[in-house]
Picture 1 (cartoon, rainbow, N blue to C red):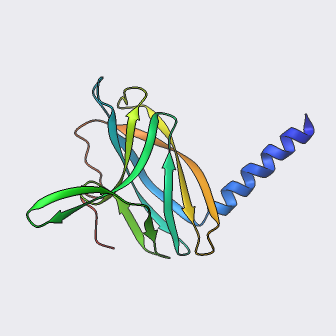
Picture 2 (picture 1 turned 135 degrees about the vertical axis):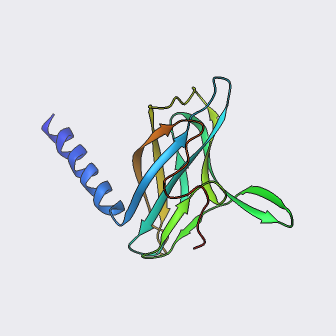
Length: 154
């Protein structure tokens, strides 16, 4: 029993120290109506070193995709991306109108006041990957982030 406890403590310490160089601020996910199968997750990320967000997952969604919205001509288009660069020392917003995470094939309704676990995976230039799980509060359908509704250029 002691051996298992020690292993768990060591694993948690390793995970938190390894990912400690990426700061997550103001995470939130949009609430859904009962039959809705997708939602968005938003936050601000800042890394001490150059890394790339390469994946995300959550037990409440069949899949989590990274997306980017941008103007193409006179139309706003959304497309999936394979990663989001997190340049050292620069805040990167995941927000409506820019980069964001899509929670797809939801397994349950997301209700305002709940929270959902979200695991983020970053990759270093040496291809080493690290993951961390955060709790993301679910906000009402009409919620607008205090950092602004649209992503800042980075």
